[in-house]
Every structure is written in structure tokens, then in C-alpha cells.
Image 1 (tube, one colour):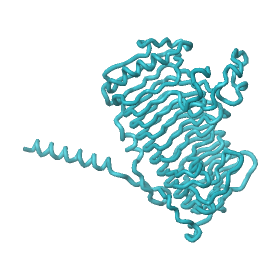
Image 2: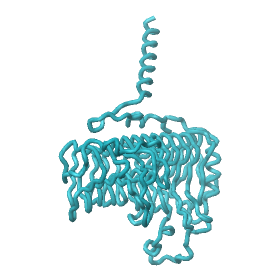
Image 3: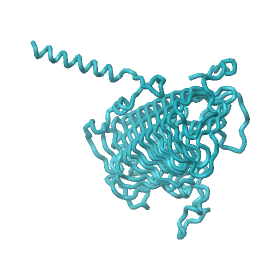
Image 4: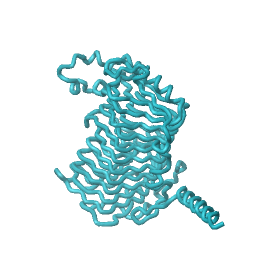
Length: 450
């Protein structure tokens, strides 16, 4: 009888633990409560990792005709290996040591769950325009999968030099390929894209020399990226390190990102994004946006970026929105950011424009509850830049323990229609931040709130 009571007590304890684990949590950010759907611990454990699933079959691309000599087109072999792995739950598709030339390919959809793509060798992209037709948005794509893992110590090389604008700068001096021979479509592909997938893990691999974005997640849930490396020159155009859009519950950590654009780009439709222990540079920093382009609605919330080191980047932590958009950015925490020779370490720009001239518009993506804690280091132009909308000012901007010193020259912090609080003294003093909140009569009601 006592054994049955002990069993019941144990079962009850397990049920209580599961209930507590699945409940929402709250975290305290700079003196204010911020609702958080996922804490870091719950995000780590929200999806069953591949190690806990017994693998049933392994499919090596060499067994499907791949040569791995860097010259033979192995696309067909990769497709056949994936087709076989796709039918078996928790299978492994193996890319062993070697250099595999692979053209544009999609893995999925409608496969069994928990497939592992084991990358030990090197995959290279074609440099002939014939392989790309009139242009493609992605090169390697994993689509509509559940429990997909890409792991290993291998390399994916986009051979992006043939796509970048100033080709002569990147071609070796003994290259036999002329500019005209290598002319590529104007549409540049993302190297590795995950679309419509849940339970995605990317760990250990390196993506280098991307034609455009290195790694993209679009309409995904429960994503983990760790021990991941990107490597492209700082002047390679539009080569974002990691691009996230319309995705939720994303964890990025312990990674080194060097690229020619944003190290991490967080776009519309994202929530519960947690980034920590990342090195960024060269690049443009970690950015939310640009949001609201062409009058679109953008909703972004619950973003945490902490323990990040940035060196020689255009910006540090940035929020950028276009005039004329709608929606909101809210509940954002940037903490423990170390910057070294960063042009502008802290930036909010609601007048973002990446072309020659943009029209002034009154509507805007609202920005509120933005927290900066312990941001230190050196800058080369402006320490803090807050350019907020005239019609919809930034509100709830708080700064704590800011210590930024010029490594060359000096400019004062800039603020326009930014409201918030200095929780500690700052270096340099940020006296331009307006205290409190704007008058309600001056702030239009937004019918497009998220």
C-alpha cells in the first residue's frame, strides 16, 4: 500500500513539474516587468533534441553516386540520398569528407520527423550562371520539416565572389575566368534557408562566401543555432549572417559571425528571440528591421540580446524602421554588449532609407519598452543615435550603465522625439533623452497595433 502511495506521489510530482514548465514566465528588466513566453531554460528544452531519438538508418551520399571531387555535379546524388532518408524517421543523411559540387536543391517537404543532415565535408556552389537560370532566392533549402538538424564540422561555401559587384577585387590574380564568363543573375541566393519548419537545429557548421544571406529562417518555430560560423568579407554586399523572419522561439548562441551586413537581422513577425554569447564583426551589428517598408505592418516583440562582442562594425545594437509603416517593436533588452571601434553602438532610426531619397510620411512602426543595460567600449562616430518619428515618438527607452568612449573624434549623442529614463549616469551624458512620456494629445491612436 505504501509503495502505491509513493508511486502516486511521484506521478503527482511529475504532473506538477510539467505544468510549471509549460506555464508562462515573467522576467524583470531594468525595474519593469516584461511578459515573456519563454525563458532561456524553457527555450533550450522546448523541443526534443536529436540525441534523444534513436537513429534507425544512415544514408551516405557516396552510396548514391556522389563523387566528392569538387568538379562532378553531385546534386542528383544528394537528392536521391535525401529521398531515401526522408522516408525514415530519425534517419541520418551523411555528407562525408570531400568536396561536393551541388546545385540548387530543396530537401523536403512531407518527410518523416527528426532527420539529421550530418555535414563532415565541404559543399560548394556552382559558379556558372547556367546552374542558376534567371536567378533563385535560395541555394540549399529545407522546407516544411519537423525536427530537422544540420550539424557537423563541415563547410558550406557559396563561392559568392562571382556574385559580388566588384568581381575583380575577389578573383585570384591567376583566375582563368573573365568577368563576362562569370556574369551571374541579378537575384543572389541565400546559402541555407529553412522554411515552414519546426524544431530546427543548426550546430557546428561554417557557411562562408555567401552570395547574399548566409543562414535564413522563414516561418519557423523553435529554432536553435549554436557553435555556428559565418565568414565573408566586410565589404561583401548584403551578406547578412543570420536572417530571421516570421519566426518564433529562436535561440542563437556561442557563434562567430563575420559578414558584410547585419550579423543578425530580426524582421517582421518575430517574437521570443534570444541571442547570447555571440561575436560579431566585421558586419553591421545586430539589427531589428528595417520594418514597415512600402507601408507594411510589422510586429516584433520579446527580443533579448546579451553577452555580445562587436568589433569594427557599422552599428552595435540597432532598431530601424521605414516611414509609412505600421505595427510595433516592443519588449526589447540589449544587455552586456562590448563594442570596439563601432561607428554607432546604440541606434534607433525611424527614418531608415537605404536608397537615395525617401518621402516623409506621418505613420510609423511604434517603438516602446526598449532597454539598454551595460553597454561599454569604444566608438568612432556617434555613441547614441535616437531618431524617432515626429508623429509616433519612441517611448519607454531606458539606459543603465552606459560607458562609451571615442576612439577617434567625438560627437554628442543625438536624440529626436525619444522618451524614457536614464537609470544611472552615462558616459557620455545623454541629456537629449526626454523624460517621461509624450503628451497623449500629440500621439495619434494607432489602429494597426499588434
